[in-house]
Amino acid sequence: MSLRAAIEARCNALWYAEAPPPATLRPLAALYGRIADRRAARQRAAVEALPLPVVVVGNITAGGAGKTPLCIELVERARARGLRPGVVSRGYGRAGAAPALVRADSDPGAVGDEPLLIARRTGAPVCVARDRRQAVQQLAERGDVDFVIADDGLQHYRMPRVAELCVVDGRRGLGNGWRLPAGPLREPEARLAACDLVAVNGSGERGEALRAAHNGARFDLILDEALAMADDRHVPLSAFNGQRVHATAGIGDPERFFTALREAGLDVVTHPLADHETVPDAVLAAAGDSPLLMTEKDAVKLPPERVVGRTCFAVAARLQWAGDGAARIDGLLTRIALRA
Image (cartoon, rainbow, N blue to C red; front, side, top):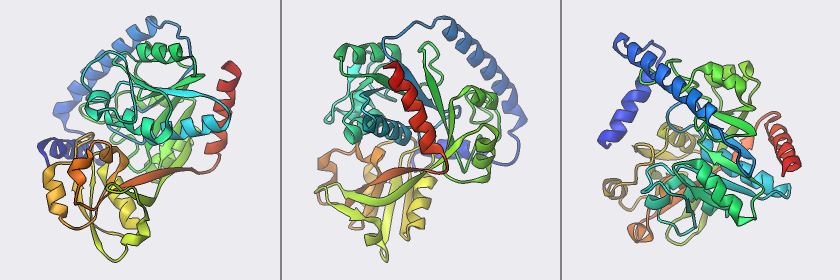
């Protein structure tokens, strides 16, 4: 495990424990809250109109919770209704700040792993920029976009939005309820009341409590197929039953991916990575001749030459709504269609 992954694991253990955070971190959390809230107020006062309606997908916790699969789901459902969605993102870790259109063959270091994954999975126009408003402007100039989905833009308050979807981890919830760095919260739980939908990713007591309190909807990420990275073969996960496999994940909660593989009946040797971390050579070597399974987000960062002669697989996540979640998303898209 890399140093960065170890630090993330330590923070998550602290933030999502039942015990309150150390007293030494609480003044820092109060300071962070004051600074973040003042910044948000300044940004709200500087909002300027944009040429396209924007639907924001984000969260109020640090780290991933399932925003990218929800963005992909929105694109696919919008297209099924005849809409032409585009996607904007900051592009975490990318080089440069200026707007850049994402192509299927873009360098993940130049555009970010999640925007590249969305572009490849959906074929929708995707633009990255530090200032997401500039990215919206660039998509508007294309003339083939009806509305924009902003990936991870909940705290980007200078960008006006017609709807907000906040994603929450069903197992971990909001952790200990404290602001950074004492807890995982960018904003307090009360922020959820302003969102059009609180989308709870997976089951769990914490997530169910948030869903009930904020009129949310649950979705699950279903893993049932893997793509062989060497030759694009589609392989059912059941094909790996009875053999030991290695698995790696550079996402907000790697254990979620590993647990899903175990629940599919796989015997898994795990290699957790830090969020957005590229699969290192040490993990490839540790897998040896055994199958190495990874998330699609990890796979987009691996060039073909790194998987030559190896049995590497990208595991696709299929989003499935529970209860009235799908109907509520369709209702949101109907509102968008009336504005487009």
